[in-house]
Image 1 (tube, rainbow, N blue to C red):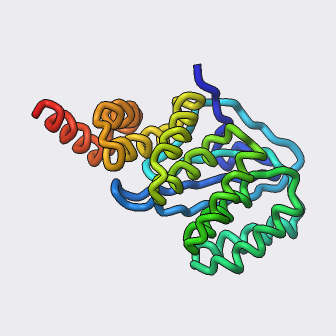
Image 2: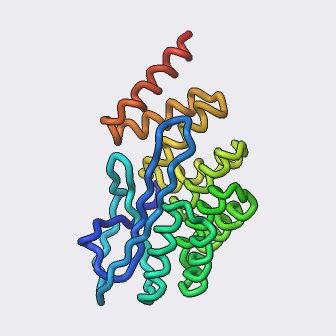
Length: 223
């Protein structure tokens, strides 16, 4: 049985923490990586362990990490710079955040995104590896790292990471969708693609695109 993730809505989480919001784009395109961690201040927290909570285009994950106000501000600035395409400045701030937080994967995930957008694949990979060093089974890091490998043509490594996510966190639906895309478009493995598309579609029946992809693959298999 897979692990459970700690997910919560903002109003339920009172202490200082990060909230990650991950947005996805359509099949066949590089995912639009918009990662933001929102900090909440307070003295106590109430975090219920539960199944993943997600909406049509985002998923929320909370990491319990205390941070100083100045670090919070630097992180917010870095996210804004990342979204504006000012990657070098974002990386500078993220490096500072990483030095001033206690083993948190958040800045390294964002650095991986920034370096990838700068087409510095070596540093992107190193950043994702560092994030996994901090938390070897973090589902978001594994998913992001797999997307990176997929985008640079390292399909087998991408597959191994997606497999780790869906095995350990079977309720993490974005990984099933992304794994299906890998099998569909890059590995020529329609059985794998259908399997993961269907898992995702059962949890997201309003995703008409995935419904079409499943039907198309079934027709292809049937000849």
